[in-house]
Image (cartoon, rainbow, N blue to C red; front, side):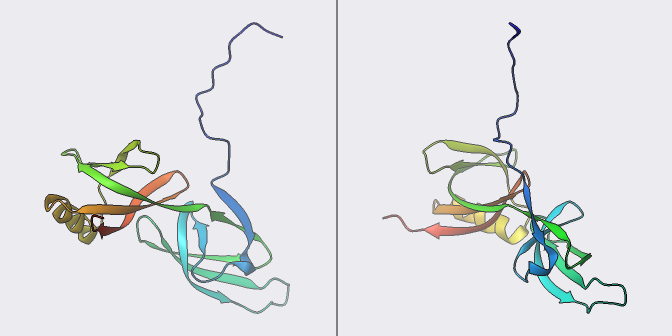
Length: 158
């Protein structure tokens, strides 16, 4: 054994950002990775088997972060990547001038690395609610190493 100290920068457990699922089992409302982007499936159509075998699934999906429409055609027997999508609620503490928000996590620590949403409606709701001093809880969706605010709700004080 060597006497050298090993230092590893990575802090994740090595869990994959996606998992495989057979294309024929992915349904409308589910998630799929198309062109390296996590997407929500809005339409699935399956063609019949052709002369040489495989039925094909045609997926129409919307990127969950950019809302761009993407399409893909995959043989139904082949595996597709499905992203692990998590949704977590945080309480809003502060909005900074540099475009970041400060959020309170369940364990009492703060999360300060999230940018303001790009969605104009959500942005105006967030800013006006914060300026009026309302208690706001934001939903943050995360998938494949990306995070973005996707919804907010006002909470009346108890």
